[in-house]
Image (cartoon, rainbow, N blue to C red; front, side):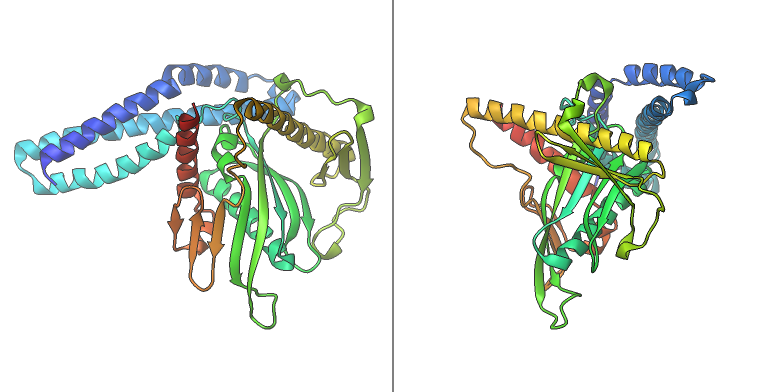
Length: 371
């Protein structure tokens, strides 16, 4: 590719990055960072652990976004200077270096542009994820555990803190369900496109005849509730049960009845938490999960009313959203965006960003089409 072509690419990337900086409001981010740094330095910060965790999480996010933007801007400026040098000295090696840097910058700026598409009411929230095994018996339970690990590995790859609230193990293998939080701003907006039914096709490792098995698991993603959400739950609407925590195969991991299960009687929503030693801590965590799920129910009811007004009878876009095929060929394919890869191993190890990015772009295009 020639120097003028590179110059045109650099100009386009510069325009895209400027748009991103405007949408993300870099000046506001810097102001937020300064205020959060001041709050984080307060000597009494950790007197309120929930607030302290919120402050430190938001600070890490603001610092990370600013550093990411500043590094990209610096690299883009350096690439422009290098191109000018290559042109003035007719240096083929420097020109080739510009080409390599352009490839890296294009990918990085495309990824950052995804953030500008997260403009929903709750997109900036942390995420609460629940995975449940579906049809397919023990294979489905095993598949649910594979998805559980996939999302935890995805969070680990990005350095996002996670907290597992509850895991219900299947008797033979895998899990019946798991609920966990990803404590990172915009985790909900990012992962919300993962909600729906996931399907696995493979030779069952649990079938002694080696037959092919299709199994299903459901992924639910809701935003973490904040104090401003005003989710009030009368005590009479709750049934609280306590029980003894247990691990795989019934192994006792607690000697007291500290695990808590809360049932919201009007809706039938059930949540549980067993990750803490204290019954009070587990109850507090379970209430946070319950409020998040009731917020999602309220949002769904409001959306259903709007759909009725608009006459929208289309089914949920999240259903049957991705297939993972391990036999007779290797492929993971998103059924909404048609994005696919032939490397399921990498996907199950947390390499799901291309699927998420394609899903976010697909959703935004769909929203624009409905407007």
